[in-house]
Length: 95
Image (tube, rainbow, N blue to C red; front, top):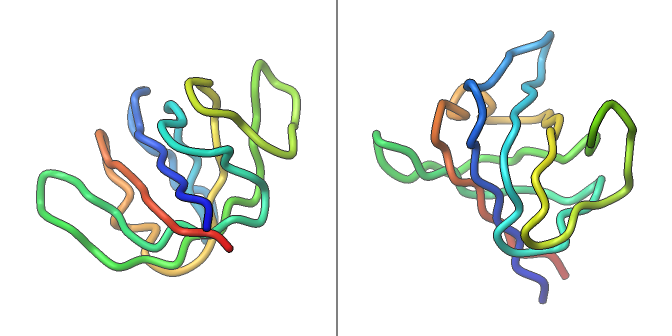
């Protein structure tokens, strides 16, 4: 199993349609397009989510993944994106 973890470190999330864009850093990974985050932790507690990574964007270019320690913007779609707030830490477990 592959643990994934990403923390928002930018100017806060931007909601776009039925998804959200956030800038931050990969703490466990790699985080790949198609991966799912299942937990969101923020000041208000811990929440179950089902957020799919739709894109990884680094300096305006699209990539298939980001590695541990890398900062980039990710685009998320799915259930629970309203839980993505400034400073959120997202976690998941991929097969």
